[in-house]
Amino acid sequence: MTADEQKKQVGDAAVAYVKDGMKVGLGTGSTAAWFVKAVAEQIKAGMKLTLVSTSIQTTQLAESLGLVIKDINDVGMLDLCVDGADEVGPGLALIKGGGAALLREKLIWEQANSCIVIADAAKHVATLGKFALPIEVEPFAWKGTVNRISDVLIEFDITMMPKARKKGDDYWITDGGNLIFDVACGAIHEPAGLASALKSLTGVVDHGLFLDLADVALIGGPDGVKVLH
Ligand code: 5RP
Image (cartoon, rainbow, N blue to C red; front, side):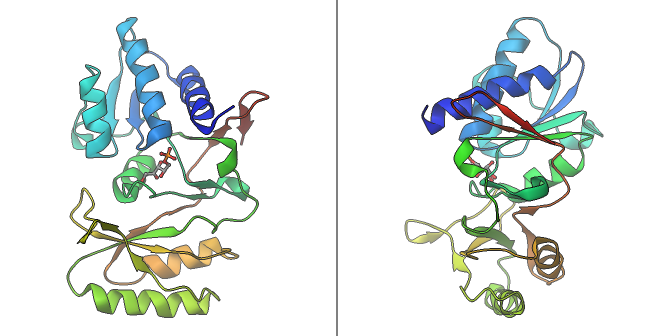
């Protein structure tokens, strides 16, 4: 079974958690895209949902499928959010942000009563950190912010320096107008400590560690979808 088949498998499986009348957050990325397509099928079949999106990319996909995306400020608390991840570790701790949407994703996740992460089997890991951790940084005075990030990383025995994400020769700019720096951590032994130390730095808008946010993980694979709590 290919990774893409597994992504479709979990995107389709997540639709079982969606009930008529719900307010639902749509995640970002190639796995979440399968969920968006499955939701579009449900709506075509008559289900009524209020939808919000975690990125411009997802909004464009949803609208191309005829879905209506609402402003999160007009919707209030969501019933459910379904999104992909780059790594799913112990305790459903996640690395997200491979698609540079981590800030809006985290805002939507934190405004949802229940969050489901969907991923192919390769993303289920024993220790977070093989996937480079994305950190979203305010562009003003970014060099000083990156120096302070590097100091924090050293405190956590992470010696790799943050690397600016680029699109060709240009810096990658997020939907919120910020920069993304990726850190090849290797292994993150203290995710909670690292998460709060990074978050405390002026200039760090947010980071891709999603801790204590996912309620359920649906992991794809040849033997069917594994449900983790
Ligand atoms: C975007 C994300 C994505 O959910 C994550 O990168 C997984 O993407 P994909 O499903 O394409 O592998 O966090 O910011």
